Length: 253
Image 1 (cartoon, rainbow, N blue to C red):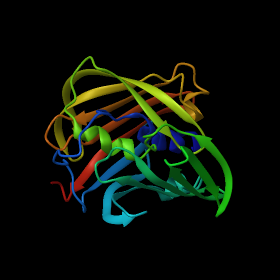
Image 2 (tube, rainbow, N blue to C red):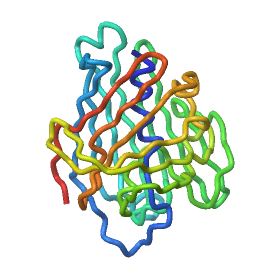
Image 3 (cartoon, rainbow, N blue to C red):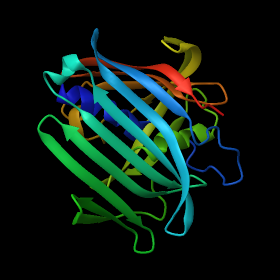
Image 4 (cartoon, rainbow, N blue to C red):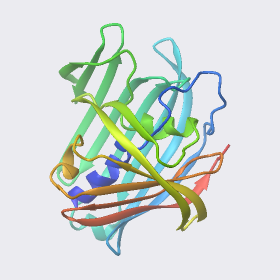
């Protein structure tokens, strides 16, 4: 169950596009947008997840968006591995760089409070655990955390047969992940039927459960409408297959 939940988290690490977006475009989302997902492991429902644009506020003297992702297992999954985790990303209003990344993680008997501060003057990502500085790593002049890139891709039109390299940092490591796009097709989820384009990241540079599964596959489908929201995530790893399907969307622009 732990690996299943970690896999769900990793969808945010993987799937985004358009790293050269400009600051003068119109964002396809707004404060108050909320996306709710049903999570399943095989045919078994195991919980729900929520992505939301929480606020627009000033951080370090810069106007920033604050976005959140939360996961909660249901009563069935709680018997085996209880999860109550919230991830928060603070990103510049032009979506060119992450400013701060936070994760409150409650999984099984483990509780962690993680914070990453991106210091672009020193070109360092400072990793704090439970309020104490744990480590620092070097970063380039602009970098994205796992959650912010899940929103950043929506700034550009997705097309089939693209190949994009994504610079990402979670505070512990910096890596470039290659994502390829596939064909578009109709995808049915509880929230409706969407025309969506498939994205497939290369798995060799990815940590966690995918690194432990040599034949792992992750696919994410994004709607091709003006909102370009992730409507379905499907993964196959050594512990089985899982899906996240959009069940409700509100506050869309």
